[in-house]
Length: 270
Image: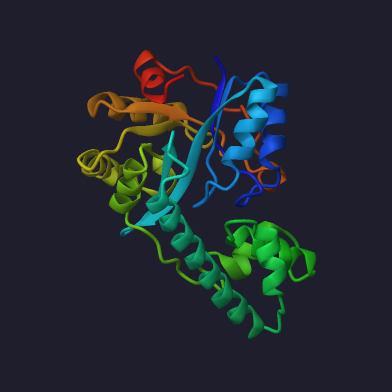
């Protein structure tokens, strides 16, 4: 069984439509995928319909951004996309993204960089983010690359950086659980240091955390082994995915190979 449980589409900051993601998965012989767009499930039903035609199993997913003293991302799997309370939560998060984008554009204007908010909203689909602003900066000739945009303007030390207002990690886990989903800590060591990861997982487990994304492009074999060890310690499922964004990032769908154990397969229903 070949899986990729971390994919982004044009519903958030990916470059491929949900249907196109499924087509790529089918071409690559991937059996199961999860569409995990940032703070939106807007592409899930389209992907599921495409999956039925292509013979690819599509899990209903989302990726929530959270923050305490450090950034944390939480993946949700098998969520009820029609859950009204969860839909409202996602709507609130997307509005916060829009508010942040407006503040960033205001800062950029002070450098005589004029970007159009309507064009940004059109580019962002259901979930506007800094990558969309970076693309407009590149299109306008203000930067030489997306990386340049983040280094000069959008990153934490950039001239137009605006901190985001997010859920706490506990709130993210709770929201996913209340929508009937499985909550999985995404790429744990991308933002969180090794010194606090054990405490973070222990704390989130107490509030219903179901798993850890142990398999990820930037994880070394040593990191992956450590995360599997933590999954066993706290009786959590261990998942994996490429975090594919299409042409925006140089990572191929299905590039992370892993085999789910029986515990993980049962939990995900695959």
